[in-house]
Image 1 (cartoon, helix red, strand yellow):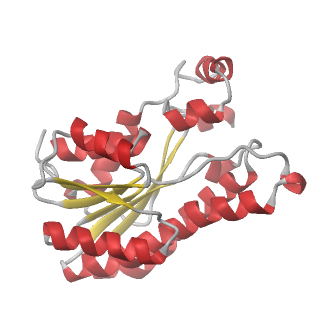
Image 2 (cartoon, helix red, strand yellow; image 1 turned 90 degrees about the horizontal axis):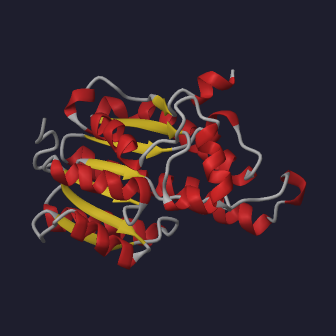
Image 3 (cartoon, one colour; image 1 turned 30 degrees about the horizontal axis):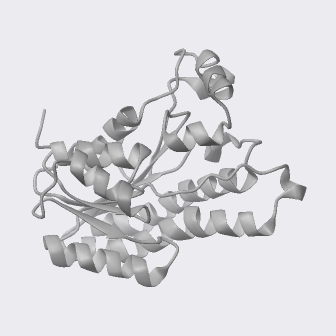
Length: 254
């Protein structure tokens, strides 16, 4: 099936690599016009190349999502360029490994919250009015399994991802009636540059594969499959939901 997002306009934050890049590529194949939003300009441009993008169906936005002015400008530039906004994917986030709670540096806490929670809030804040002006839209926030069960390797990351889940619920409660569906995915381990970096070694990464019920972590393309469905009209009756996508890891741990 192709054309599931034909002529839809999407912003994908964190589109320069990993899950965000896979989403950009999948959306482009499904007919969407995609704005690749990221601070990593070189990575964003590479994503556009992988999308075979033209000025008519792809653009790059250099944005720090924790800065309200930059986020507002991002939405305005996309609407000006493509004429509308239908989809927002909040994929940009940071993961910094930290010691246990009492030893966490306040700077790392603030930096994580600024990006992972405030950034999602700001993107929703400025995207929602643009969607309502166009009759509605779909927002998909990317949380993490860490936001559901917590992880020991990063206190601020786990708490921030729990915040993304709750922000999703609140936003859906407030804006579903105005035509804006808001949903969330909570991935388990996914083979991305961020995950390989956060595990600190190839040996630890391989251990994640061996200890998984499927014998492997997920792929970015598998995450993109679920995000595509949530963004499309096929999920027209879905709002306020968080979908765990972890290959059975959480179920196996209970």
